[in-house]
Length: 219
Image 1: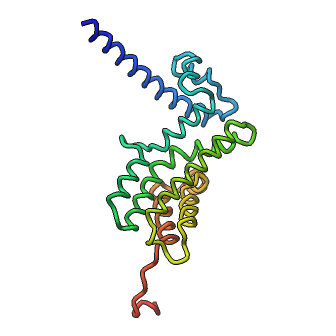
Image 2 (image 1 turned 135 degrees about the vertical axis):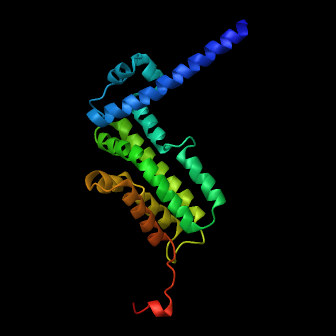
Image 3 (image 1 turned 135 degrees about the horizontal axis):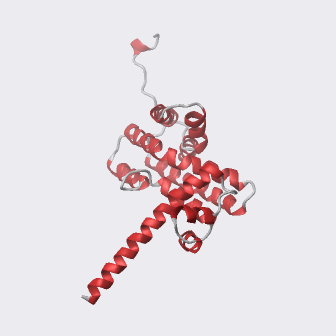
């Protein structure tokens, strides 16, 4: 009975720790996006959740560590399986490059609303904060590595003149937080329209276009 009680208590502590971790990420996201990086304090985030400042530092290490955790959480998307893992599974089972890019476009519309505001926050704070400058470099390089991996999936199916390196940079551009900010936040596009634009633009830039039939040339 003693072992069962210890196991039960341990399980409850782990569950509570996970709830606190999740709550801190949500509270941190709200604070950072509402007040900005510099004005947000660890104490204010801790107070929002009802935990100690020490617990926040123990969980994330620093204020920039909390931002990094928020960014990582955003990359996972909204599904039970993280978005990058779903993308990898899809690439392993789908051979049609058009369908692959369409799936990427759908994932972009899921992840961008979560990630883009945080990346823009990181970029703004990087102008004056060394830790955030390092985090900005990390996010940029990680996104480019992901796009290079995606470009390898399209090897042999890219349009003439588009190398893997160029394909990766094209996808890196269309997945940028700047594009989401311009079209959705500032121009008021719907997520559906934004996703269609990203998908159609990548298809046009990356894949060979079907040849016109003779009766279509003069249309």
